[in-house]
Length: 199
Image 1 (cartoon, helix red, strand yellow):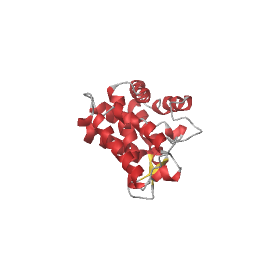
Image 2 (tube, helix red, strand yellow):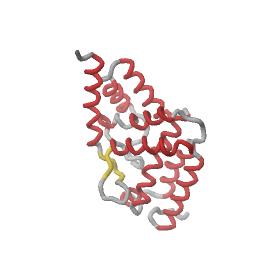
Image 3 (tube, one colour):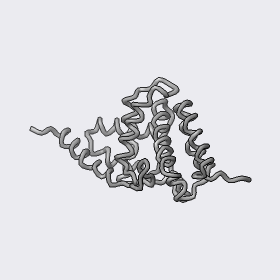
Image 4 (cartoon, helix red, strand yellow):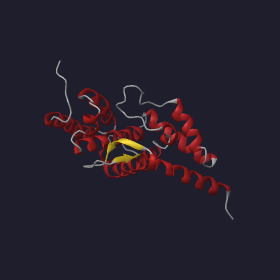
């Protein structure tokens, strides 16, 4: 006999399949194909596991993995906001909260509450786990863009300072990963794939 919980959980599992259709602006490493949100979330989860030792603070790795797998599910309803979008602010919106309540609300109440809390914790970026999860979220597209001759930076004429300002959030979760990332940004300027304006 199927329990009510199982039916709700299967309904949620079917719903999140839609994440595979949400296209991101960034492209796969050394590729012309756009990444989708599900691929992005999987990659961040693997990065969190592999790079956990570089966190500045002791972290609950399972919680970080949950965060990065959950963080973009709201985009099923709210859509993906390009981090360098000049028109739309890349911060937690009312639209995303409505999406979180609807999608996670498909789950049994206790599980829904846990997922919403984890999603909010990531968005707020205050805890050590959230800081490291956000570091992963900012690091992956940096690696993609440097592998694609500038990728979205070149495509959308994103200047150095804007990239630097967005990427420095990596420093909140890991000084060593930030050092690596900062070097990549500077190398990108030297290669001419990221434009640094001279005053």
